[in-house]
Length: 116
Image (tube, rainbow, N blue to C red):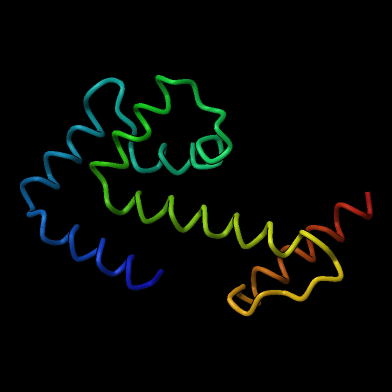
């Protein structure tokens, strides 16, 4: 996964400053485009399939033009996948590739939810 991210970051660097500048102008000043911040705000809805067809099209257009956001989406989906693995069963062993910080956060969230 880290190798893939590094490759995408290198691809981002090789796009050239003019193309990146034009993409940033497009995202900021043309109607119907998402900024990177707005892209981040839609990650959960996109992953859950809760966007309308038009919203999904705009989201995916931004992702095609912005490798940083593509990496962000893939990272988000990976975290969701790992969280689901951890929560499948309380008796199941935690996979080795799940970060300890994520496990602690999930345990804390489950404890807070149970206390309600």
